[in-house]
Image (cartoon, rainbow, N blue to C red; front, side, top):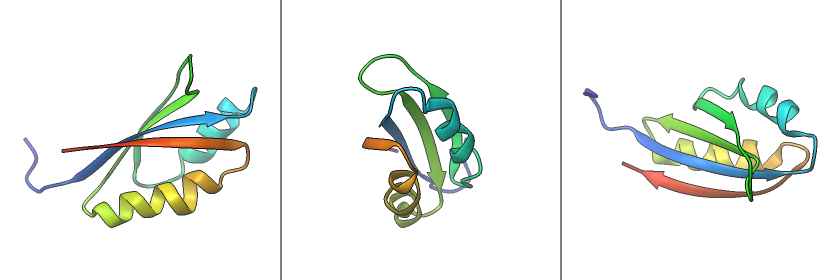
Length: 80
């Protein structure tokens, strides 16, 4: 059980073919990213982001993840 309320989101990422591992390696250095996996299908990568602030989660997605080279699109699911 968590002691404080956390803002969490799953981010599904589409990227250019063959760039998955490089993008995953780059995302591993982003502090709010707590889990990241390569997937198969419409989305190539799924990441879980967790922070004390919803604004920090949103900032990480819009100013960091979406700016990584060869990321084509993201879809974010916010969770409680």
